Length: 208
Image (cartoon, rainbow, N blue to C red; front, side, top):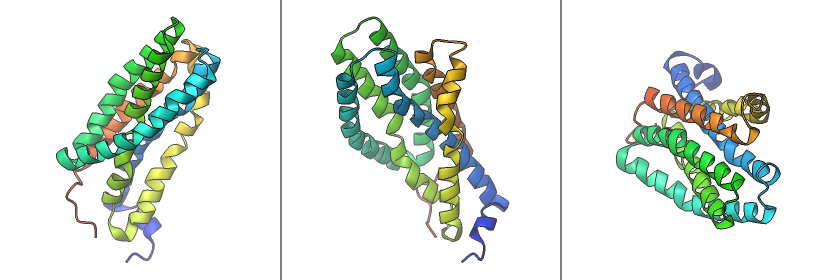
């Protein structure tokens, strides 16, 4: 047992572990802002109907169940660390491409079916990696500081990405507003990759 787990998690090797988890979660939280912001962009800037937008995200949310399970199974097969890095790369490359394709499709008058499919693909790709987050963070800290490490690493990292709306307004001075989330996706993917590479493999770690 630890007499002061909060103090201990901010010292020694626990502090390094916390920094690595914080960096990774900074990427995950930044990426998650994009699907959250997307409905407003679709309706207000891309002039996609609320019905089509709601339908796309409803189907995407259902399919996310399989996405979460798939990421969990993948991490059991190839390891947590490679899976995190692959997810970061997928968000950085495929996520950014899908977002651009979605915006371009909508702006050029593409079909509603195409819009729905692109939204579903984007939503599932960006959000599915969260199926690994809880397990991985729990495996990064021993029992006596796990709650403190998990709580800080998971929750504190949301503060900076929470202001994503302001970042997009600033970026809008340099590029069309509807394309600004692409910058967040690039940053998020890079942070996730860096966080994953800095951490160890935890698939077979003993939780004690």
